Image 1 (cartoon, rainbow, N blue to C red):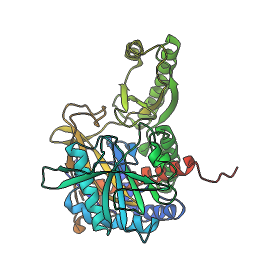
Image 2: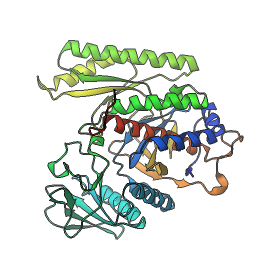
Image 3: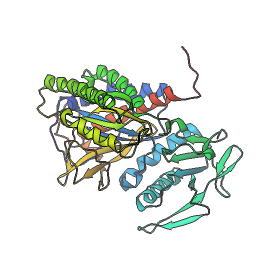
Image 4: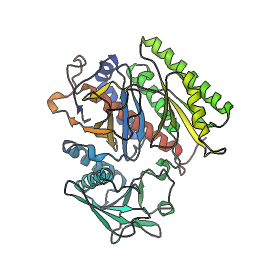
Length: 428
């Protein structure tokens, strides 16, 4: 059963939603068959944008760290999904070690760890938090505002195993995206399950690889329900390493952005959309601050890029870029621009929340300092989407849609991890 997130409906409801609701049996069967062939990422968070005329994922995270934003009503589903995920990987599992971000000392990160510990404890596991931060040299207990406490313990490496003092886990769960690189202590761990695998980290991962996989998934799904894949897929262009130091490098980027804007304008014209299209320039290989620029007109872009280039050294570190079609967000919470974030574990949607930002616009990145989170509750069983009922007559319909888009992105994530697995056997 897919949970249905509930909040006030905002924005126009279009034919896409009706098509998805009418196709529910075919969609659920399609997902079921896909999961027979592909292994989902252990857990995933998907940022979704609803523009009214288009609904698409704009970012997919394999190390979700906002579990504290899920409401108590969502926990039973998260626990069931955790049980299913662990049972699939290590049925006899007894001990689980969670490895957090090295900077996990703030209230938000610690509350996230407390919620994760609660979920896996209720799933039948002994849970400890093992830090690989050089700053954690001994067991450190930190009190949380709600009365809970979190104990961070230094991870100990013995031969091919990881653990903490007097604790030998079957499974190591990374809640650390390793954007600064894979430390030696995590390498060559063959006797335990390390989840997600190291090639899911930002050390090697690229957004362009994910969105190429998502493009394939969207095409197949669009064919399944008879819709234009563009309605659920943001166009993208893998730019590669950018040169902002030379005029030629800047000109090349401006031309690619202009070409992307032209393609998006063509689709807007096809659908009679009056909004001004925009392109988001993102780092291809990083997660924080991933929206560098939102561009509606390339006239101003050249000057901005020259200014950025002037602040760089003659030989800056290579910066890989991806150009992505911008997707407006039509959602509002208390007049603040908002976007839904869907949380998944194994192959199940387990919850979600709104990320909102009072000082950002509908075309801007909301994952920025000043953002806030509004938890969403599940629909009651009497409010399930009703096939054949016009869109909007049942409030949770919109959120069945969000769950579908989240699962499509998660499926693309499984394609991506299969394609980038360094240990996979290749057949040409």
